[in-house]
Image: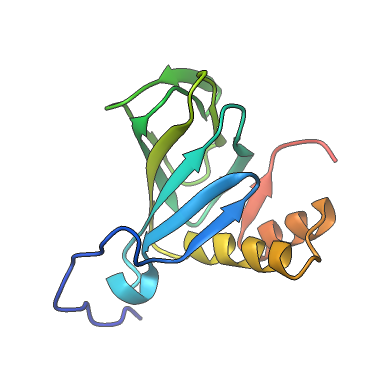
Length: 153
């Protein structure tokens, strides 16, 4: 059951949780508690070469809007090279990933519907902070959040 929505819908940058996940700095702009479970939004700042590995999740759609830099974004079986102003929609169940490929750092806005993906970011960051993060722990966190990694190992 959804909770009631707040009376304000303004979330200022710099006031949200900021975490590092797989080498990507993620700032959660809006979470499920703030949106009644409808959506979550985050900024992802990536150095060249950083990104999210190929994965899929059956419970949520994910949208990527490039603000700065150049990214290769996998959606389904197609990789698109995208830049500022480009948007890629990854429907639930589709394989997807992103990687900053330009010579400069990149930034993208990500949105997930419904919310919940932000909890994955927080769990990964907690494991890194307490020193327990490993590839196996990362895989277990993914499984707990309904994320299937599409990489060997």
